[in-house]
Image 1 (cartoon, rainbow, N blue to C red):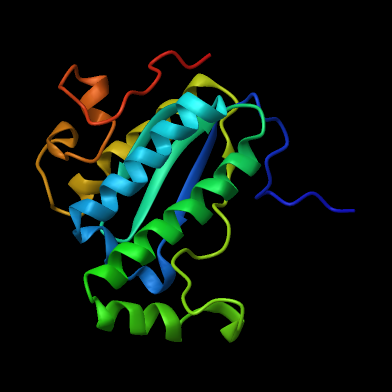
Image 2 (image 1 turned 120 degrees about the vertical axis):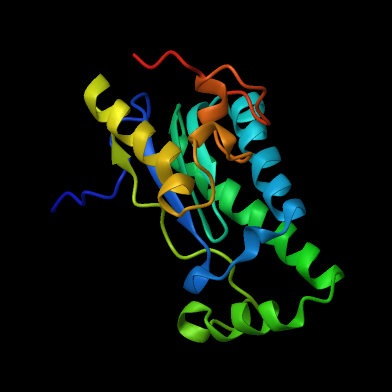
Length: 178
């Protein structure tokens, strides 16, 4: 049996995750959709025992670093819950064009669901030391800067860069890594 590089082998270690909207569709240009994700990340901390170290929500994907027992199950529940909540939100708002594409692009055209929000998996990468943690923190926090959305990472509202620079943030994170 071969080991996949995209599996969680040690729950207690922090892992870098990416969740991508199907076909990179811009779902998170809607603040209410971002709020659903942030609330779910906070729930994972408070109710599922996960430790969140960093996050950024962009228009069509999010990155985060997390550790905790049952991490894979917690993330599976996170993706399922947020998909249902965001799809309900889009339907209530009559976002027919976006819903059309979330229907058309769903994997295997599965008949058990009308829509698919997330691409499969999160491609977890274990962060084994401080250098790896620092590199991924930098990657996460520089994401909106690289895209040209802000000049400084802490100016992006939907990022833990704010936590690391002492600016009021939307979501608590742990600043203690190892």
